[in-house]
Length: 374
Image 1 (tube, rainbow, N blue to C red):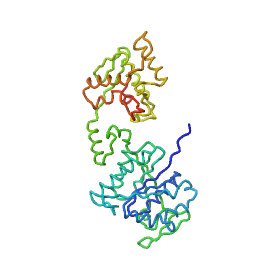
Image 2: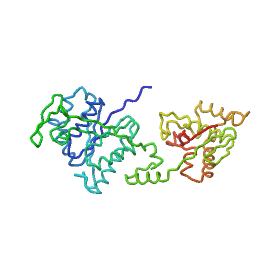
Image 3: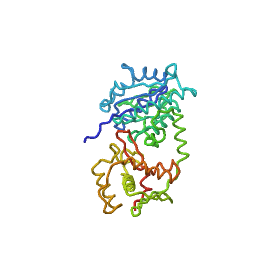
Image 4: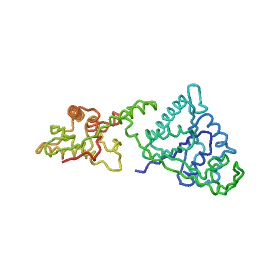
């Protein structure tokens, strides 16, 4: 199976200084050899005007100049795939982001955009915090925490010395250095310019999205409130011991005895979570939970392992019968919930389902470091 070919997309913020776009592209493409193919600019009506006049103009725009100066670096870049997305309210595009209402409209539009863009598995997003108002940068960082995937990156761009950062004539260091005149009359050569790309690490909550927010799209404020409420109730989870000798699971200091078939399924699911590869995050349940078809475990290797476990649990028994699996899972859930009497804690120990109805997967959400099978 060939690896997926992913499209490399730069998502950049823009206020009224379009230089930051070419500086970011220069840092990514020319210095770091990242083959950016598509450019998306998040801005306001005023920023859009600046971009169209100084950056995207076909005759004198600085984007075309950058590509013309470094053609070998931009072989993958598609000039037709430059998109301007502006913040809007009920009356049209926002000229600027100055008050509470403007901020609310911008952040909700940003969250909607990031939700949609990260739903496409064939993309890698390179998001730049440089540019735009400071609140725009904060919102983009938060959006990455909510929606960012393992492949997505967050950056800040630093330009030095500061004379270049504030100079309206500097867009990037050209191949042949030129001299720029400063406001104080001094001159400075672009050969002295330095553009640094700083990767900003961020906490990824995407794998917890369904658990935190369900399937309904929420506003930014609603998302923050839901996440905060869950964090405040985040439990100190006790260890899980699967006692294979006595058909008992032990959660903290509480024991639950299961009949052979229930215990077999629980042991199997606990084993799956215990054996989760380190390369798969605990929240990426779809990658290590067990697929179920029409309510029954169906993979051949799964049935083989269930048979092995069942014969240990019930020596001399016939083969494991995979019928009524979902009914058994429901019984296991009820026993655990009744014993723990805490829905937030029990959610990590019951056999949970993820995914759509036609392709659900089942497993235990508890991290493998807290699972012991004796």
